[in-house]
Length: 114
Image (cartoon, rainbow, N blue to C red; front, side, top):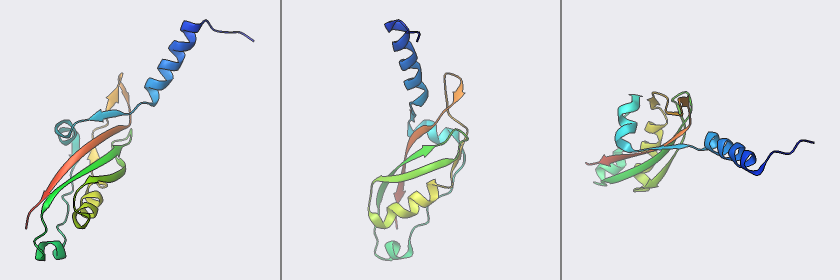
């Protein structure tokens, strides 16, 4: 069995970790990279009740630019589900790391006003 020197082992581990790491993308850059944006539907009940507020959604964007998953970070539960449903339909220009397509984590905010 061939053993690698410690520095070579560390380099291999660092490379493997960098390949697995997701890229975090700010809201401004994410919106610029969005090729298709579906706006959330304001729920009729929330509108009638004059429920307003800001919703933060975190989405994982796959290497092909489609949204793999989305979850609410903050906001009224009556407003978060429509925002999640909308973000799940967004498309992005694929994000890259070291010139290769990579998964990205984006945070998007939506304001609901009656």
